[in-house]
Image (cartoon, rainbow, N blue to C red; front, side):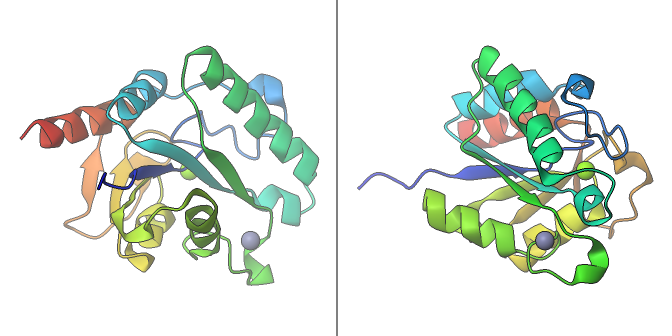
Length: 180
Ligand SMILES: [Mg+2]
Ligand SMILES: [Zn+2]
């Protein structure tokens, strides 16, 4: 029996693309350091790639869900042009005070992705630049990794949190582990 595909679940802003503070213009999509090469490498290692992103700018009335999704779509197409395929992009459009089940660190979107793509959340690796990303991993019993791109350097995380400089460095670490 072949082993089920494992997934790396990535944050968008500050992790894959530069955090432009409530980005709503697709033209503003700009990749973070190490992101494209890192995603290529993760894909080459056999990982599926999924994005889960909090876009509270929608719930706060700063921009529409369609605008948020246009940014997602431009990122997706720019990555496809580099040969990187995203299995899905899941967006929470709610403001924090709405108390939804899908805003990270709540795991609603992870469970939706896991159902649709048929993976075990406990076996995924969550990567992001904020404590909420690491907390999401914990909520799912998964491995969480903080990147130091975006807000990562100012993130207040528990001692013992796994940290890498960027997605490229994460890919190298996972490649080294796979080679052991
Ligand atoms: Mg982020
Ligand atoms: Zn939500």
